[in-house]
Length: 252
Image (cartoon, rainbow, N blue to C red; front, side, top):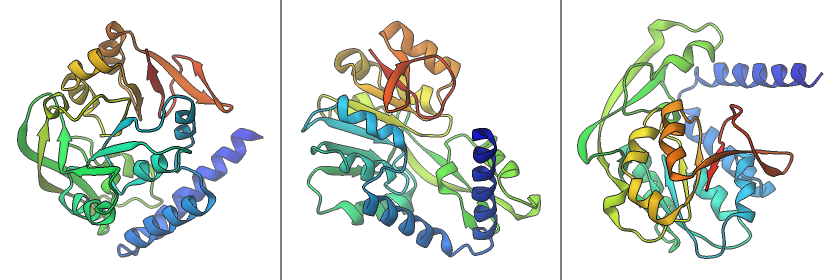
């Protein structure tokens, strides 16, 4: 029964997504409605953020790598105690929006960089479908950036896909020297390994808690010698597990 409900839920989301892509101007309204609903219910957009109540303390520094439209910033600000947030968003339009939105918040710093193992001036690739921007799929790697769309929209039409390249800068996060880091969220569409390589000194020194949306085998192999093990958040608690799930934690 649960699997049937899950399947139905996915179908509903796919149906809504299919409807929305026919009205590209709905992107900002859709995001605003989602944020308003989550703030009203005081519920983070991803339930895994609830685990941070037992991992962090007031004043801790958190990195939001791949800030997108500010979903994780809002989730961190829902904690029962204040934390400091440094958010990284390389998409120029999203960076400007976040900078305007949080410029008065002394606990939030927004920086216009992507994370990698070397500093560079490069491009970030953003898929569009029928003019609707899927900025959450943006990646520093062009191959496969639009792959998810093919199974996520009813009546998918290849002719309606466009991938736009935008200028962006990448940095090694180790080089920024922003302070002792307690938590890092990584959601950067396939660039996690390079970002972690550029964070090696921070990981070794600060032992921050990590939440990685889709960790690859090479990410897990990189973290293991540093003493990190995977924990999945289920039934209201973190459980040691190597099973695949979205947004697993890696703790030392």
